[in-house]
Figure 1 (cartoon, rainbow, N blue to C red):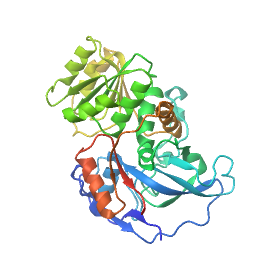
Figure 2: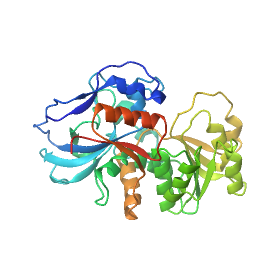
Figure 3: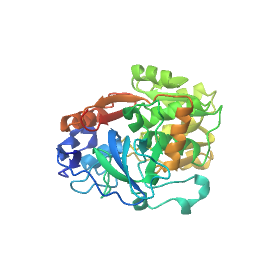
Figure 4: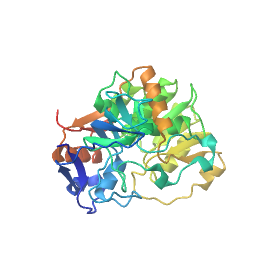
Length: 363
């Protein structure tokens, strides 16, 4: 019988402890879907990846404004192979096609489309929350429109690392208020999944990238992934001043802001006048301050990168595939309760550069 990771209890843990795995169980007796609705496909999922958002939902962490229903399957990112087609799904797909699973039902969005094009959060139907089952299961039935062709040169773990990472990076860099151009400069905070993918994508299109981390070893990897400059924020707490020095006092064009409240003011200072801070994460504790002068008198913009559309994932994957760039996969874990628990702890402790991935199913 196929199996799935399910949320069997909803106790509260801080996601940063990695203890949320206590809410999970491996159900070894999940019925394999046999009746595939029209316009849908059955995917044998081979790998899934985890992000802080997944860890927050699994842990019941109140920092994230959503939840998952009891016995639901978490995880928004995955990749696999099509095993069966529903009526009308054979126009684009064939049995045996390798696919990337889009995290949401949102197909298309650009900032230029205007506010009316931005869906309500429930319209996104983000996998792995509320009653929308995610990717930590061996089989899933998905709308044919929510799948993306998988580049042939990538393994399943590499493919599973891409949906949210490539989609978020592409959304921030190409579909927000400012479209990144060759020759511009991007600051990527940290070496987690979104940041390292932003490094790879920005470098691939001809941008200069500055990366920050508290680890010199991780910064060395960031350079190999495409960063031109690196800053250790533990050694240089006023890292925004170093960014200004590296940019001849001008600042960067775009910041991929991961820390949130405790780092936002530094990011604004590191951004050039009329530049863009893309708010992606909120990994620090809340801090109060006045951002008005840093925005009003400089023309800087703060853009909330709320979720990803399939269009964003496709674009990010395309940029990487054109140069056959390997996504940064930090570590791959086996398919078991213990494996998923270890993956959550690795994610919480920021032990690796890049994405944390779980192989789905037995070999």
